[in-house]
Image 1 (cartoon, protein in one colour):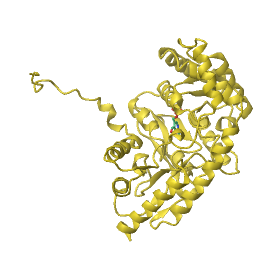
Image 2: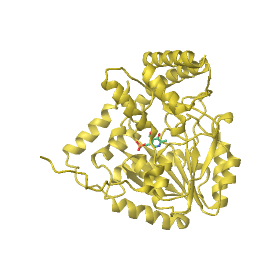
Image 3: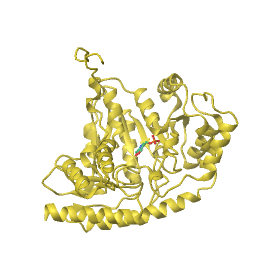
Image 4: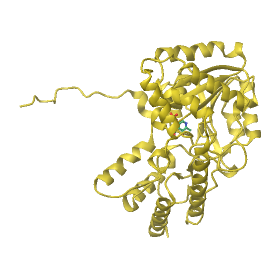
Length: 404
Ligand code: PLP
């Protein structure tokens, strides 16, 4: 007979987790339950191209396999293997980043963000983060005990950052600003004047800019992407990028940070980052051998990726614009759309019922933060046209049945 467990105290999670949310995965739990009941779910929720018809370029797999066979299975240098560091540095220089002070590899952009924010902010200080945002930003900031401080992205202005709101929100405890461009969840690609204005505010208020540019090779329109760090070589900028999205290996966890700015200004901060990089030993070793072939080898797969995404983006925008109670700008980068929904219910209820009744899985706007009084859903348009078409038919039927 097993002993009674009644007298054992419950193990509580730390209070700091109260503000950690990850709606993208939370909604997936309900979808898994429906799938176990035999329902076919149409997944428009998760930004993993490998779940759809996108395949890793074979030369990257060959490079990692070779690295493993050659015995590169021990710990790597804390900042990364020299050939990967050099390839990232060379690419940063090709993009026009000057005053480059450090390059380091991490387990995805996720770990780079965590390390660089941890090395900068004290409890009670704050970092401006976008609203809506990629939820990892506020999860890390909450964990660090910072004050929440978000700036609005302006839906009426193609989701560009609201510069007046940024200026208003900067206070004596603001240490940095997070910029996601191309943006998750809106698909916006910011204009050069907007980015220049952000660098001016950062210069004026001594802020570190965190430029998350993980989607910068997934631009779906003609207008080019401006690399933020190139606009202000004197301002401390950490540019983040990695192999997950553009090179179709999110599970390999290969990301990096590139720090630029005046050497003397960033020195102590850089030492803090390096200290944390050493404390966690290193990032995945054999996978780092894919970085040079990725950045310097054939980029042909990107042509196909972008052309598939353009078709799926257009299909998505057409569907959203012909759906009553829904409005949507055209995403210009990445693979996300963030249409507005005009309904009496909460967007979380909307998304849950859409999933239960039509088996279409999207994520509610509240999972990303949104301007007060507005409601949205985030759509990932990675699935093929047939899946997207069925999903949008389900969406339109759902809206007709509940909100006619
Ligand atoms: N930054 C943004 C804006 C993302 O959308 C994602 C993943 O969806 C990440 C970072 C995480 O990237 P990684 O796989 O390199 O950790």
